[in-house]
Every structure is written in C-alpha cells, then in structure tokens.
Image 1 (cartoon, rainbow, N blue to C red):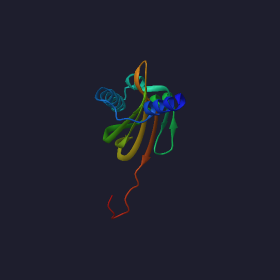
Image 2: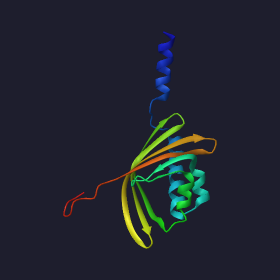
Image 3: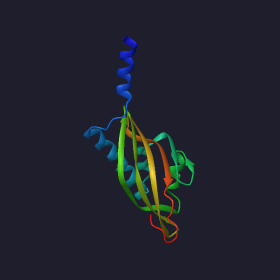
Amino acid sequence: MKKWILFLVSATILSAANPDAKTEKEIMATMEAYKQALLKRDAAALSKVLSDDLIYTHSSNLHQDKAAVLEALKGNSFQEEIDFKDLKIRVYGNTAVVVGDVDFHNNTAGVVSVAKLNVLHVLVKGPQGWQLVARQAVRYPEPAPGGKK
C-alpha cells in the first residue's frame, strides 16, 4: 500500500501543470531575454540564458551547441525581428516546455526573409534561474503557388 501511495504522490508531482503566475512570468521573462539577446546580437546576455549543455536544432536540421550559437551572432546573418505567437507553457518541477509559433525575420547579407516556425523550447531552472537547454524548430511548409496557407 505504501508503494502505491508513493507512486501516486510521485505521479502528481511529475505531471505537467500549468505554471502559477510567478513561474509563468519568470519563464516569459527568460524567453524575452533570449529574444532580445538575439535581436541585439548580445553574446553576453545570450550566454546567461543558454545552458552550458545546450542542444539547439534549427529547422534546417543544423545542430549547435552553446559555443556555436554564440559564435553565429558574429556572422552576416541576423534576426531583424522575432515574433512569438501563442506560446504555451507546461511545467514539470524545475523543467518547463514552451511551444509556439515563431516568425524569424532574417537578414542574410542584406536579403530579408521570414521563417515561419513551430518551436519547442525546453528550459530548466537552476542556480542561474531559467535557462534554455534544448530547442527544436520545424518550418511550416510554404503554400503551393496560388494556394492559401
């Protein structure tokens, strides 16, 4: 009987929950700090938001670690605008999953394009606060010529 009680308590603790207002505010502040660091190409600010063991996967299937993401800020491609849309947050103890649509307005050597993505962000709360430990992006398909999205 004690095993069943322990199991039920553990399942309740580990189950996904909508975050309380304070936790949601902290997570959204981290997402905003991430966004602003990318827009400003601020490696110091971005470094604080990214976990040292980051796994960052682009919609192109490019995989980067923290050092590569920070190094990419020096390149000729950057984001002019980032629009988070309809973010949903689930919290599992000290882990948060943030899913939503993100439009990245990219400028690559003067050529501007918009990448419409669905992105999964995984954050963990540690001594430095909430940090991004994993990101996976999927590009929405382009509509057929003459078609609608």
